Image: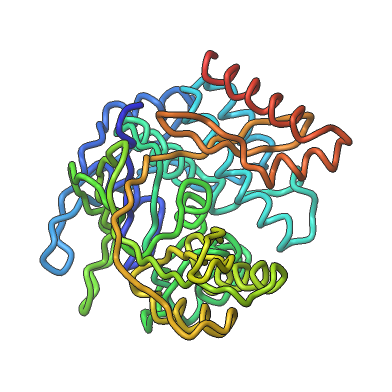
Length: 388
């Protein structure tokens, strides 16, 4: 398994499709490749302008989509047809379709219409399509497997769109960013746009700090305005994650001889609820020949005091041992396969692929099949996907 290549996106000034695209071009993505992919969509009447600008002393790439006619209103169905007809590379097609599906799902919910009846206004024009598909093409050119997203800055006040005056951030943006880390600011402009939010919704995973990686490149995509008190840019770091890496974790444990199985089970569930990475119980022979149990917990080093307190509270132990240990972690990815019309995620490393048991259990219960059957079908679907 090759090293996984990631993009870590710094959204301290928000996220917009054109800024994301500019950052990726600034980090080394080929504009020729992006324009070739966009050309396959057979959209007429647009061009991509790229210029180097300064934003609060940072040199960044500003991209503008020059459109001859800006009055396009497209339906969700017409955009699907546009993308499918283009015969783009598979990953670009799937990521583009998923991004517009996310937008359409939110719009349908907000306006109370069926998804196929959604009409895109701002995000149906040439510029929005170029921003979205162009960004995904740039990720493909950089061979990005995963995108991690830092907390996203949001503006305040109100914004004007085709539907009228809306609160800032727009309701669609807020809906798309559910589950992501956001930060409010006093900037009275739209820092996070629906196109930017849809891209991170589909492509990104929320992560405050950059994960352990080998940095390859960085880039900055500029917003249109040069703000007085902050750099109006989206930053992106392109990096590789080795197939394995070491990290320090806290090890917290105690040995008890007067705790029932019921209490132990409840204690370990509580420890996991309090942020433990893992917890287990090991039977041991104690002094005076007494049977006992060692309860062992792994946690982030900063969580050691919390876990220690919870372990004492849950088991009644009078003493706890703590230490820092190194654990080596294989790089893993998650791949989704369809089994009997149900999605199952597999955790994949360079050693093995394993279906997630909770997914297997859910599908087994829904279909009346055994866990073993569903597990085997998931592995068969994964193998077929890898050989296709």
